[in-house]
Length: 556
Ligand SMILES: *[C@@H]1O[C@H](CO)[C@@H](O)[C@H](O)[C@H]1NC(C)=O
Ligand SMILES: *[C@@H]1O[C@H](CO)[C@@H](O)[C@H](O)[C@H]1NC(C)=O
Ligand SMILES: *[C@@H]1O[C@H](CO)[C@@H](O)[C@H](O)[C@H]1NC(C)=O
Ligand SMILES: *[C@@H]1O[C@H](CO)[C@@H](O)[C@H](O)[C@H]1NC(C)=O
Ligand SMILES: *[C@@H]1O[C@H](CO)[C@@H](O)[C@H](O)[C@H]1NC(C)=O
Ligand SMILES: *[C@@H]1O[C@H](CO)[C@@H](O)[C@H](O)[C@H]1NC(C)=O
Ligand SMILES: *[C@@H]1O[C@H](CO)[C@@H](O)[C@H](O)[C@H]1NC(C)=O
Ligand SMILES: *[C@@H]1O[C@H](CO)[C@@H](O)[C@H](O)[C@H]1NC(C)=O
Ligand SMILES: *[C@@H]1O[C@H](CO)[C@@H](O)[C@H](O)[C@H]1NC(C)=O
Ligand SMILES: *[C@@H]1O[C@H](CO)[C@@H](O)[C@H](O)[C@H]1NC(C)=O
Image (tube, rainbow, N blue to C red; front, side, top):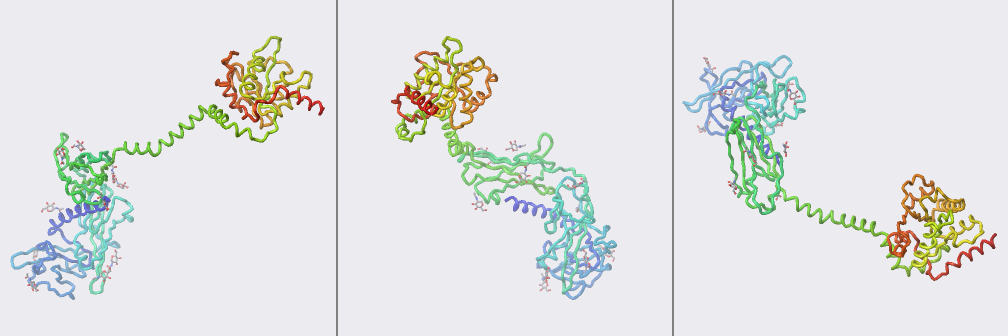
């Protein structure tokens, strides 16, 4: 987008340079190597399209050089041609218009240095300030172009191949532009083309000796913008400004938008330029315009070009944007809110998971009832440390009174409780193993010191139950602690493992009526871990162990 404008800016700079060189042209000697084609224009004619007739003379001669194309030196299109030039052609050539106007150019034909395509002592001197951008101009070659429009000019620097690998160099026809000229850019540059005349090829070249000098002038500094974007509401008013500071007033600015000049983009915009000297002695140059009512078409990038006669130009942009809150609103509406809804749903489920599952089971219970039996007799097998001394431990009350009250009476589960449902005298291991096999869950009730201060029977029972639960993964374990345990490190390894795998429920209730309600948080959590009830609670669970015992006996 900015490219076109950059080129037009360059052209302007180029034009200034050319005009500059034209101004002093009559004083500049034409320097050409021997054997090349030369065309000399009359300084009296500002353009070759002039209808005025020019007559050329060699200095001191009264015989005009005539318009005979077959002569080596002849006049054609008001130009004097020497094809090719010889050493003896060096000298002054006069051009006359009418009887009164007369001017001329000096030509110097020289031999190139040995083995080279230039003579370092016969080169055009061009000076460029350091640390600025500058142009080298290939002089007096434009006449060859009008003869053959496909003139291709090649630029090179003596002893330095690959000139254009340095990005600071750019060739534009007769101009070689150099960005940020530095000391090492000094030297001989050659611009070269070929010219065909009467079926013969001739070289056309100019050697330029670039001399650099410390510039009193620095590059202008762009103050604002620095490629910013500004947010403006539709319909509001905005002032767009661009300014720079430099050593002279000769700093030029121009606006471009959407690849065209500002006035072309919108002819209602009025650009105002200003310049003044700042307190620090620098020139401040700026350009600004108002967009009184911002329309949709105005949300574009406005390019500001800044250049000086010796500084080819820089571009900065300022971008108009819609306020971002619209974008945020869109994002929240279109993207963020569904994520929030999902998050909220996940959180809600995490928090109310137990209630949701219990509610679901309750409302869909009729469906589960129709399920085929899984061959299990008990919903849970309960393991607990029974009393050590003769006094009633809280675990006994919990397991023998509270647990049946809630899970059996209120929820209709069918439990196998060791010590209640087994018959005395039976081989404990057989009973336990068989009962666990017939249970859907194992409830392990732990009293804080039950694992450190236990009788042998409990240990065996528990160990077998735990062992079974551990090796038969299909049975789920519900760990209930009757008190907070401060130090889990003292627990036996299997318990630690089960805690990690299935979690632990802590009974903090007393033995009041209140804490024996199936709707309290603790019991909801137990019920959540319990299986879906398979059979209606009408079964007489008290009879089950008897039947069971009978089978063992018959088996044994
Ligand atoms: C152009 O000519 C003027 C005098 O007419 C001189 O002061 C100036 O230095 C010349 N410029 C160049 C680039 O030779
Ligand atoms: C220029 O010369 C041509 C013939 O050589 C002549 O026809 C023409 O009138 C002349 N023009 C002027 C302006 O003298
Ligand atoms: C033209 O030639 C004369 C003598 O022939 C000489 O004095 C004069 O300096 C020359 N003019 C130029 C501009 O070379
Ligand atoms: C222009 O140059 C090309 C080669 O670049 C050549 O073939 C052609 O003859 C030239 N035309 C004229 C009018 O000299
Ligand atoms: C000039 O600029 C070129 C390219 O940036 C760099 O390689 C070179 O060293 C510079 N020379 C001096 C004298 O600063
Ligand atoms: C033209 O210049 C090149 C070097 O740039 C040289 O090799 C060639 O011989 C020259 N041609 C003529 C006809 O002088
Ligand atoms: C340059 O333009 C900016 C933006 O409008 C402004 O704030 C600043 O005052 C201007 N600087 C000068 C030196 O005028
Ligand atoms: C922009 O508008 C303000 C007031 O609305 C006015 O003072 C200023 O001169 C205007 N600037 C231009 C460049 O039109
Ligand atoms: C910008 O330029 C393109 C073509 O270069 C044109 O199609 C488009 O309408 C222009 N936009 C505006 C807002 O002028
Ligand atoms: C601003 O952007 C232009 C091109 O769009 C770039 O050439 C220039 O270096 C940038 N300037 C800054 C200060 O980023």
